[in-house]
Image 1 (cartoon, helix red, strand yellow):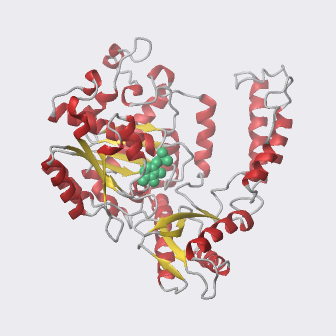
Image 2: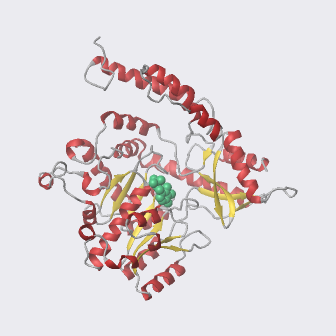
Image 3: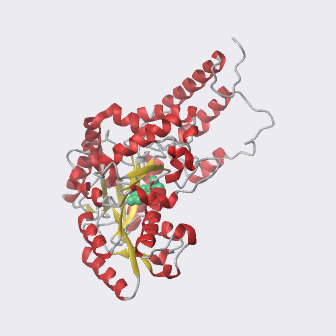
Length: 486
Ligand SMILES: *Cc1c(COP(=O)(O)O)cnc(C)c1O
């Protein structure tokens, strides 16, 4: 056999053999690393830092792949966090479904770039199809709606809110932000989101030139949803003061509690005041897949834009997200033509250049992961996965609610449960200290990674249940373990 180039996968048989050999060796090393159930091996930050310290990142002479893989096996693989472990429930951070890892191999190998058709011919057409089907799935009119894959919920939120701002300026103020920048009265712009909405609201407001002060934080009710009476009062107050309400951002699944804002009522307010309704469904977008629970997010169809994250409830590898828009004409805000990339004449001849809808230029073929996984598991398979996660949270909540050693706060609408452990009667530590200590103890000594947040002023523990392999027995076991550490 001819010498392999050792650079790329090429038509050459020797290169194909090296490709298969390297991928196989990698897959074997990864599989072999899965030999214990821990979510994390436990090393503390300073120890881990010392263990990987190197001044030899770029040695004068390289080594062969096998030697590098050995080093990865020794130093990196054992210390990687394992989101696939049933001992992991800290964040909206999911294990990756097997078929989607295969998708990643295709995505990386062919390295399509989704900005222009000539860099991603069939990939562009697949993304268009996936987006069209997603629009339908969320209740949009597929002829009028559109969307684009993004790097994550934060970018999808920025994209939705930017379209909201430009739509408001175009329609209410007859002002073209794209051409002329912000109008003079931009300091009066107001958007509303719950006080427990994701911080990407404020970040987006900053990036859009409106600043944090444009984001009105609406108090939440006992169910951790935006309080509608408070929201109405805040809007009325703003209108009275000459401010310009332009958008409500509903959170469809808050990061900590999974609580869902009332989209039907928010829609009415948006219509009354001429506002855009954005849905940050980075978390809750997955609920649509559960035949049992989809009705909880039916209001998404009433929103003008939707943030969907596939790297949370949908169990696809990072990154994978989409920004959907009910009226595709609003994407004009993100269109700019470049002679070298997305010529206007291309479109007339049927070449779709997806960069026209995107903040990113070079972009991954993440739509393939959705395409392969949806086709492989079907509506039934998907419904089982999502329903199980939501049922698990309901089960765990019920267990906590009857346990006098813990306090649990909100009945989960999706799959997150926030609670705190109450100290033993003779404990010398206060409750906050006990809860913090237990989380650290689990992380470093028990291989269990759970979340921590603050609820109603108390340090609390959080189970974010995204792993359908979790069983009721396992949840009971974890609760016993946690209580035993008091
Ligand atoms: C995770 C999350 C985001 C941010 O999404 P990324 O994909 O991490 O950028 C936004 N909103 C909510 C409600 C989230 O839970």
